[in-house]
Length: 636
Image (cartoon, helix red, strand yellow):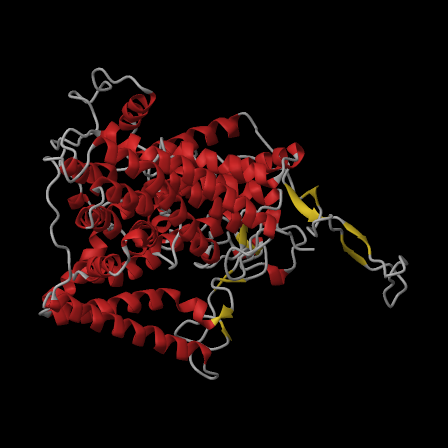
């Protein structure tokens, strides 16, 4: 669930405010479970403050663990090796006459793994030491600036925000809705909603009131249109046909978490794209079913729009001639942009054809080199070629101090490319997203007159960035928590301990996936925001699940479901207030309870359908995206 822009929310004095008169107790006369959930949720700190609290908890726990001398033996999953046999059952021998070993596979074709000890026991590292406090202060800026996908989100929102500012998204939604037959209006509205996350807040702000007006215009109940749109936008937030800035953020966090177990693990922004695209259709079917068979029949019995004086008359939402002209030009520009990239990708010798690796401006390939800072006495028999700095002999005077405080630095591992080689087009997803929305948005603005000057252009760029301000604030504090967690080694200790328990429990993968979706659903009643929850859950669950063969891509897919289906009923969703304002236009006495009860059937059915769909996908063994497997198989 994305974070709303501050100016999109009602004021605290709005009648849609979720708290009671004093904000300290549940509304008088309403003591149901939803009222208590709402009341408790409103008492929780804001997401940024939650990460401050979590960071403080890590600081305290690291000190306690160090004093108590906690330790855990790291274990890693390793394939069980067996002798390879030929068709007759005889052992296959190599050139030296020794049996050829191969990974053992179970009846499903999955590699069988076992846990083996890996290295020395891990102990926590306290942040309440001189070195720990120095590290916290010295790394504060670096923790934030190296937050995964920070640049990706920023650049993508430049183009997306401009297209939204000049009105392209709103006109596209209206055009698609108007050309849809009346009987197919519901699935079209839900499908539009499930794909609206590409436009950040636009789906929440534009589609629900538009859908209500469209339903009213064709003689259907406007509240049913509102509910269908909200179910698609919020309940289907994790689906969609297009990659988004949020996908990039999930990718970065998932990759960092996966590298706790496998330092070379790499994900791309498209790691869930196949699953996302089909999920949008699943959400559409679920929303269509609930709207047309449950919600609208009930609403028509209670409040027929044709006879209810409180429901306003339908107003025209048709496109003007200028809007049609601008939309046609914008779509033509989009076709040109995508066609150009298609040529660059598929024509041999073109810039984006074939394999490649990103390079720096000096033609070097960026890499990261693991090193270990040690004292001279810890060097032992380390070869000189592995030491970046060795102190001078004693007679030459005291050795200078290395900047880390150590007197030698030993190479601790092989260099790793910062950006993995692969298809060239996969390295330019962000520029593709940026230009696909920037250029059509500019064309639409110039044709319709919403873009008249360079000042208008710059304001369009600013529009998308303004919506990121809350995200950047949360990301700053979240980055501190995540890096504190890693510095103290508590992330690895928890991953090894939890992963070992999962292996010993030997629960079927489908059960683990369903339980994880449920955990995410429950977490949405305590912490709102897609990135906020993932920042807490990814470092814990992704490494743990890798121990039992669940890939980071599959864990992320399950997270999308849990984060989405409860968005439409959790009181922590700030957009509930925006939707409630629209609801009160057609039902003046509606409150937050009215909205939650309206949306509850969608939440329940989407949870069942979407989770079931994930389990079917897993059973079929389909990849979740390009080079995005279901299983994590450790290297042989």
